[in-house]
Length: 281
Ligand SMILES: [Zn+2]
Image (tube, rainbow, N blue to C red; front, side):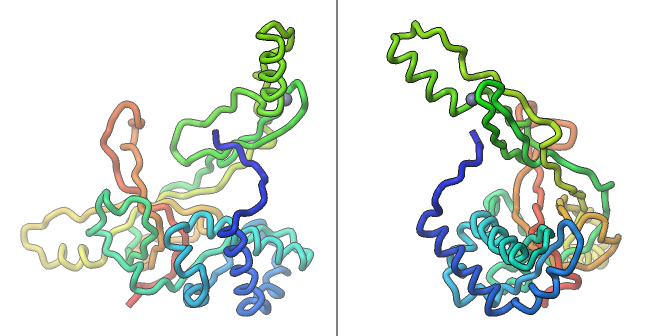
């Protein structure tokens, strides 16, 4: 169950938090002062990869990018809060070096989960949409609330019981050998108004190397297009035929109009962390 629990950060988390604090204080304090005056709800705060390179994040980030970014986002929000800003910035790391560079045409299922950097041309843009990122639940017995993280394009995770009430319930049942007259801990409801949604947009990308080959190819082999998804402040900002460097996680998704249970075939989906205009050399 993907319930969010607040616990003391482990040693690695503590190291990640400290590293981000040092990076922001030493490299970005002027930008932080300036951007804290912005009034947008969400925006991407660009951080150069080179500033992570001589820090513990150089090795932690590639192995654990999601944890590194979640903790980094926590630090940057603290930085904004201390500047009395209610904006919710998200870190967008840019300027990844060659160890992340990859060609779209070379991507295979073995690359699943990797964060890689691709030169791409945008060949199609879908209508912006939203998805349920986190749903909120309340226990109708004890009143405690919790949220459940969802995954994009997967079945919605439901919460079936209250973990606070469950503790008491099982203790009582043990003590009374199952004879206690207390209700089971499953009187919970979703709080629809408190659900958190995120803006997203699907893009189609092609590989400039493939495009160049395709132009010279007399047999006219088809040009492949790959699906990518962007979120938050990137939604609605790109145009057709734009040349970009896409830094994204390689993931697998079900075929359109199928689901995971109906069909085992998968398509690649590039979950975009950051986009830079122009190609990387
Ligand atoms: Zn409860």
